[in-house]
Length: 79
Image (cartoon, rainbow, N blue to C red; front, top):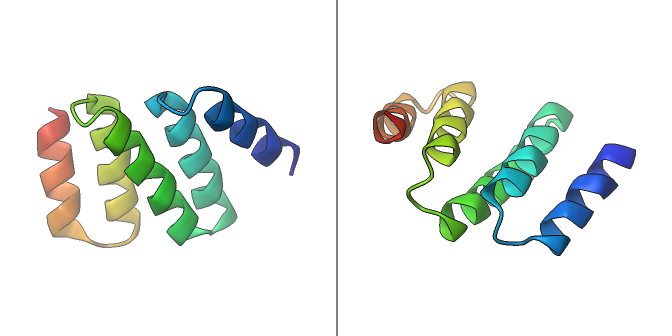
């Protein structure tokens, strides 16, 4: 719970930081909240659509969800 509060403060403080949104998405993923994880990753992508780390993490998210076509697409963009 403490980590969730810290990450939410981070994205509120710096809403254009893909790193903050990625960290929040990874926490949501660990908590099993796939929808919130996807939402946070979408925000990371909106802020910096060419950020390779965002594409890499989104690709890993899609792999976890067994969405292999989208995973491949995102991982290719990350490269």
